[in-house]
Length: 87
Image 1 (cartoon, helix red, strand yellow):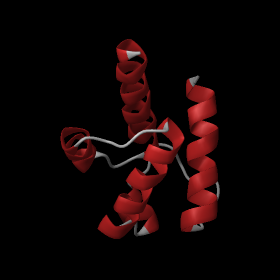
Image 2 (cartoon, helix red, strand yellow; image 1 turned 45 degrees about the horizontal axis):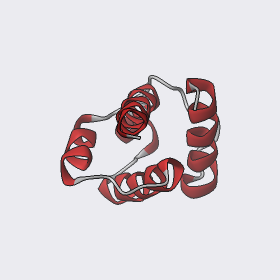
Image 3 (cartoon, rainbow, N blue to C red; image 1 turned 30 degrees about the vertical axis):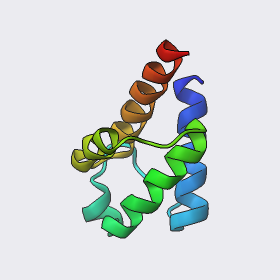
Image 4 (cartoon, rainbow, N blue to C red; image 1 turned 45 degrees about the vertical axis):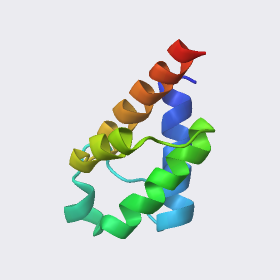
C-alpha cells in the first residue's frame, strides 16, 4: 500500500467516523478538532481493519504520542512495512 493510498483511507475514516473533512495534515488533532482518547481508540480499530490484523500492545503504545495526520500516516507505513517483512 502506497502512502497516497494510506492517506486516502485515513482521510476517508476521518470524514466518515469523526466528521472531520479536509483536515490539515500537520495540525494537532486534539487542539484543532477536539480529537480525544475515545477517538484515538476508534482510530486504532480502523487501522487494524486497514491492515487486516490486530495491533500488538507495543504497537498501540507507539501510537500514544501521535498528534497529526502525517504522524498517523508514518505510523501506518511503519506497521505495514513490519508486517510485509514478516510475510
